[in-house]
Image (cartoon, rainbow, N blue to C red; front, side, top):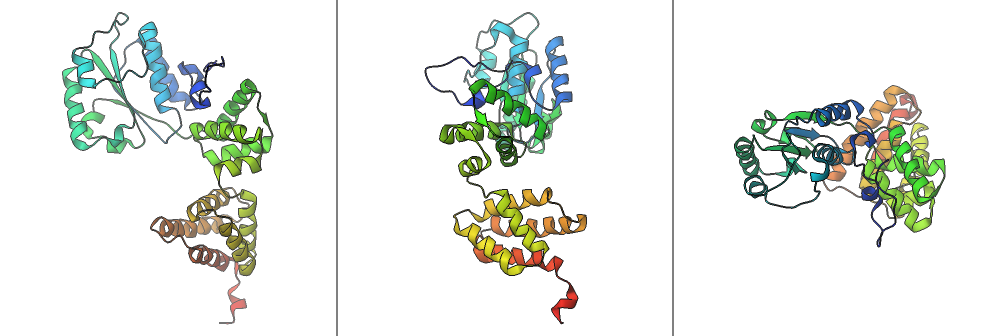
Length: 319
């Protein structure tokens, strides 16, 4: 199974405690994991780039691959300058295996650093393989991309997140409700790391995984409150929708958290398809304005008015 549930002198973050150590225990992206399993079985590892959103298993996959390739020679979190690691370090490896250099957040490297890495990959191509994890593969320069097999990871599905959260709850004897787990999935948006961290934080603070507790810990507006605003907008009740928005804003939630939750709720809201698409467009435009610094209540109430306008019958305007 994944991780270890043995007690330690200090409490490990659950995201580390239950991090998979072999490829078959990784959740999601099954086809890509199968390709990595073939590499592990054959022992012939190419340079690889794994790209995708945060918290979906990119770094964990590389660590698991290294663990299966190197066996007892695997040493995690050894921090060395990679050039000296390649040229001078003496490492005992299984027959036919090469050194593995893991670079996390590789798309944050400057162009100059990537050019230096490209040259290093050329010089030590006979003794070392490079594994790069990044969010956006297009930020990696073409000369490095052409030397690597590129694997792309997708966000994890709700069912995949739910399965792992239930497993951790069983190991840690966590009391939960099904609605509480749904709240964790809602706030994580396919990010396993965030889901597990929120699970541990909620348990540490309240000992019960319920929707209210989860949203308190995550400091996000409750979707039920946001749904009431959307219902008022669909009924073209501008005053009620603005009052609800003002109440939500007055509770201390930031404009970015409010509009992010609004967007997530709209995607699964029961409404006509053309209305949903128009709502998404309007919310997206307001989201852009908020990111530019217009975070006032006026901006949010203006959004409400634009959403309500979609449901207003023009004949009632007496124009």
